[in-house]
Every structure is written in C-alpha cells, then in structure tokens.
Length: 347
Image 1 (tube, rainbow, N blue to C red):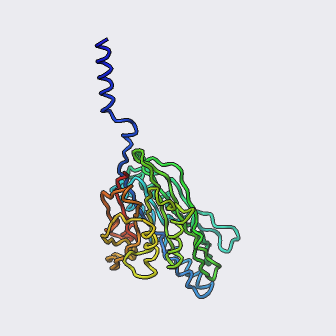
Image 2 (image 1 turned 180 degrees about the vertical axis):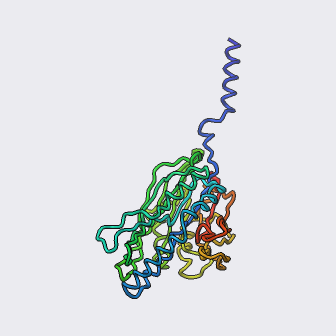
Image 3 (image 1 turned 120 degrees about the vertical axis):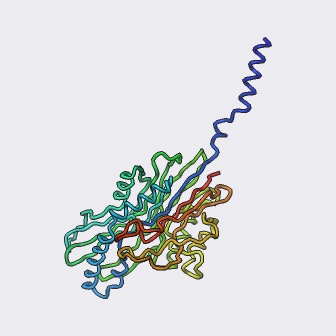
C-alpha cells in the first residue's frame, strides 16, 4: 500500500512539471515578404494617348517592353531573393498574366504569353524551393488593340506559402475595393479593379490573419478610401482585437505630407504598426531595367509590412531585398520595386 501511494505521488509530481499540450502552443516566429514583381511595362501611355491610332502604337510598344523586361529572366533573380530570405508567407503584387489574340477579334485574347505566377513558381522549384498558391485573385483586366494583335493584361494579387513551414493556413478570402479608379482611353473605359487577399494562419497554436494588397497608384483619394475599406466592416482588418499582418504595395509613403501619404496614415490611425519602426526604407526606383546604368536616385518608401498589435507581435528583424543587380545585362534588376521582409514573433 505504501509503495502504491509512493508511485502515485511520483506520477502526480511528474505530471505537475510536464507542460500540457496547450502550454506548447506558445506561438513562434513567422517570416513574411511583400514583393511587387513588376508587370513589365508602364501602361499609363495608353491612358494618355490622344486618339485610337496613337493608342495602338503605344499598346504595341508596351508589349515590346514587356518582352524586353523579360520576366522569365527576372523570375530567376526573384527566386534567388526568396531562397535567400526563405519567407513562410509571401504577398505578391503585379503577378501579371499577359495574353494575345487576333487583332480586332470580338472574343477575349486567350493565348498566354507570360504567366508570372507559374514562371516564378517554376524558377523557385529549379532553385530547390517549393511554394504553393494559397489564394490568387484577379484584379485589373484590360485588352488593348494594336495593328498586329490584341494584347490583354490581367493583374493578380497572390499569396504564396513555403512547403515545410511551421505556419499552418486555413480559410482564405479576397474582395475588390468598392472605391476604384476609372480611366477613359481611346479604346474604352479602363476600370482599375484592385483588392485584397487574405488567409487565416497559425504558428504554435497562435492565430493571425495574413493580408496582401496593392492600393491604387493613380488617385490619392481613391487610395486612401481603399485603405479605409481594409479597416471597415467587411474588411480583413475590421476587428481591432484580432492579430493581423498586412503586406503590400500601398503606394503611400509615411513621410509624404498631404494626399500621397494619406493611405498610410489611415492604416496607422487604424492601429497598424510598421515592422520597420521609424527606420526609413527605399523600396521603389529601379526604373532602368533595360539599361546598364545605375538606378534612378529615389527615396520612395511605398512597400510595407504592418501588423496589429504589439500585444500580439514583436519584430525580430526586417530587411529590404532586391537592392542590387542580379545580372550584368538588361534586365539587371528583378523588379522596379525592392522587396521587404520581416520576421515577427507571434505571441
């Protein structure tokens, strides 16, 4: 009887010092990246064309530029950046789908020229990294006529997840913003759909929401309204109590007074905190993808990783990537943007 009592006491003592399964669910570190991979050409020349003939010439030149900026080559550089950083989750912006079709056809263009998402995933796999698409959302979709063929651009925002990460993902979601830009062109009205994508995630049993977005580039008031929609009812950041990480090209610089910085200030007022703190970063300015010279001087900070709140997260590290040429011939840079990464401890 004494021996049995002693054994019971030993087992009870051991149980008292062994953590329960819930105690092991103590969060962990998650590394995230925001990467605008550049659609390949500046499409604003279509909006500024004075007539349809000039529009067609500009549209043809635009697609030539897309070929010259050579995403299959740039994908190799982007994959190298991702391999070096090894983020668990990536928010991609401007993951373009370029398609062509017969000139003047009433049917939408369907012949794929470049599928940026597939090309990047293939480049990653070739470098020994496997990422899967968690969610991909179609945004702006516009077909432009040229004298040779029709050229169709479909923009997509994509969330990628690394194979082997400890981050678990669940329900994904996405929506278009109600506030959008509508730009008249000689070939018809271009409705610039933009939106957000998200996925529910956990690390070490601690939940958080990962959100990716690309806010409007041409229209300060539209951009600020879109930032407000992220925080409003129905938006992915509506609940101020739920931990969330927002990544994206916000097209808004914290230091810019007035309208250009309004979208960032809306998010800051809504409780979002920059993972870079007060340290300023340059994330845009690699405009000479087709030259061998140095990039244009720039001090533009529009790509961000924000989180809510310090009760839920602490920042372990942050970094700007893509700051150096990856080739000696054009295109020398992987994108006209730099990427940003941050490692956050989920508490």
